[in-house]
Image (cartoon, rainbow, N blue to C red):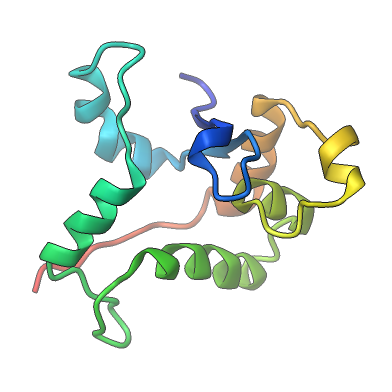
Length: 133
């Protein structure tokens, strides 16, 4: 895909809002083997299974050396988004933060390619790294 996004369906989101979540090129590279081995309509990600995986694997934050929990991923996206001065409206849409008003419910429905373009405008230079302990 030229502009990869995950289409989060209403039943998959905590506030039941369908939205697009762009995938960073490094994420695409990491998950491509998983996606290539699945039929087109098969689920690739399930929140609770990933939560269980985190529970049984020692994945730690690099700076504080504490175990990562699901909330840390959203917290990182929000806090680091401030550091790189990411577009607040796009970030709110991707993470479904504060999108319960009339504006979001009836008027703001961005296209997948626009969500991806704005995301990459800010996040393209970010390199994610892992550290094996």
